[in-house]
Length: 129
Image (cartoon, rainbow, N blue to C red; front, side, top):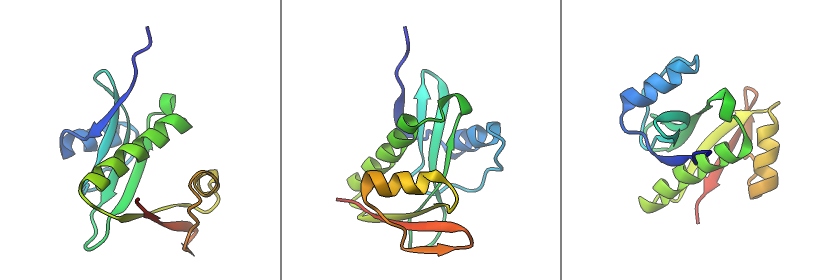
């Protein structure tokens, strides 16, 4: 029987760092919030926050190759936004590569459009309801 995934705050920065490193990415200090997806005790994805003063900058978004699909990515984003809403945060920023189809998907699904393009990155300011 297939086990369903759960999404919640990362248990610690060390766990988040270890997961990101296991996916071949050099870990950087994470800010709050960092959410992770799990199937049982196996991490399947992470959406962190890059530490910056006075702004919530989402990233990186890391997903295990086997689970690199739309539903996993959307659930990580949803879990991230739930945490932000509970903390009364009204917006956050993120970027995607300009030549990545993910930017088009964001615009199509949410109606959000990039507010600027810098060094090949589409920058979004996501407003939360």
